[in-house]
Image 1 (cartoon, rainbow, N blue to C red):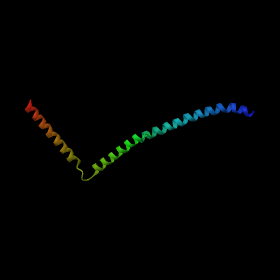
Image 2: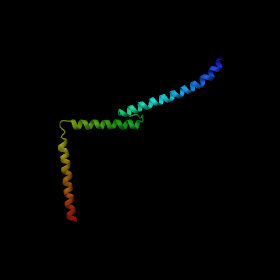
Image 3: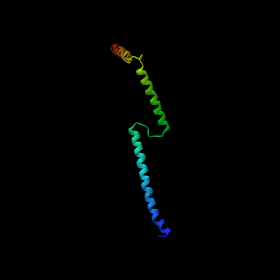
Image 4: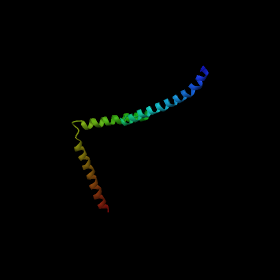
Length: 100
């Protein structure tokens, strides 16, 4: 075969090959994104979303430090809040009865 005829055969083969390559790389990219999502890692490169995730991680870290701190008495504080709210409810009910 002369060289010109090789180009006539190679161009369609090359086009089909590039099409398969594009489909394959898109498939691989989607697989990586799905694996990252399953692992809980952000797949977006959005800087606002990355900043928000960083802020949330810092907040969780602070909360973990507060709760695991030995001097922090969570149950006592929750009961104190309940007492405050309960007292306010009783006062509101008594005031409503007095006005009504």
